Amino acid sequence: MINLSVMPLLAELQYPIGHFNWSGVNTPTDHERMISVLEQIPGRYTDAVSGLSAVQLDTPYREGGWTLRQVIHHVPDSHMMAYSRMKMALTEDTPVIKPYSQNLWAELADRTAPVEVSLAMLKALHMRWALLFRALAPEDWAISFRHPESGMISFDKLLAMYTWHSEHHLAHITMTRQRHGW
Image (tube, rainbow, N blue to C red; front, top):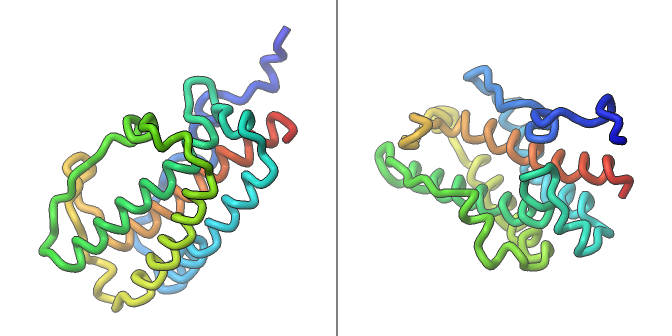
């Protein structure tokens, strides 16, 4: 019989660090702290999956959820889109960006690729993204793009969102390892 008292709730498995919550303003100190997280997160993902077998990587982090491999591939996909959206906002006047279906992307054939491919992509992408964020002038943090479903997203909010997103999916991996004793 399963001991339900030790079973994490679905919400805990789905949002292990909680939902994204942002105060609406970042200070220069906040910016630097979050940019540092973006720089360090690729190594933390590499450490988080180190030593996992193919079977373990192909284990969902929750019932009905993505596998750890899909999570690893999702993060650079998502961050690549955000990076591109940021570049559009730097070169266009408040662009309206095109959404994409992350769930459909997670089912494409490249979901079976070795995780090292996406970890290398994430490392290179975050190096470039950190350079771009650090080059912003104080007034540039208000630059925005319009997401058809989410509304206006400023660079201030974008940085906070993707710092959270990085930690959110890392927790999916680390908590799965912990639950399974890997």
